[in-house]
Amino acid sequence: MTNDIGFGKRQKIQPIAAPIPVPQAPQYTGPDRRAGARRKMLKGCKIIFNNHFSVFDGVIVNISETGARIKATNPAYVANEFLLTTVFGNQQYTCNVMWRDKEFIGVQFDTM
Image 1: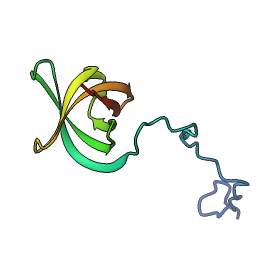
Image 2: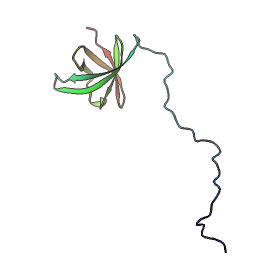
Image 3: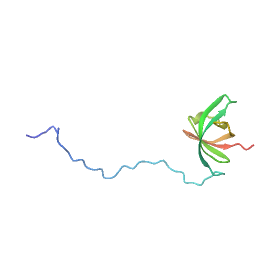
Image 4: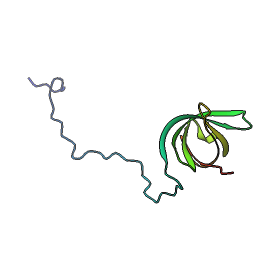
């Protein structure tokens, strides 16, 4: 008696010939245009604008003498010019946004 339905039968599974490549994000390989070397840092900060009526929380990811990279919850709503303070208020910077993406902001410090 044969089992035509297939219950209880073991079948050989053919191995996949090659693994499927995982796409990776492109890495920027051009020249570094920063004026100063960046130091890695994870320090909480406040992004203040609109005459101190708007305050966003953020994290300084890296910083140099001329600028910083800041992780913010929604960078699209941050003004192009703002005051950046560390969480404990030790340092304050007037910043101009140079670039932004979905979670980070690149800023240049205003040198008045």
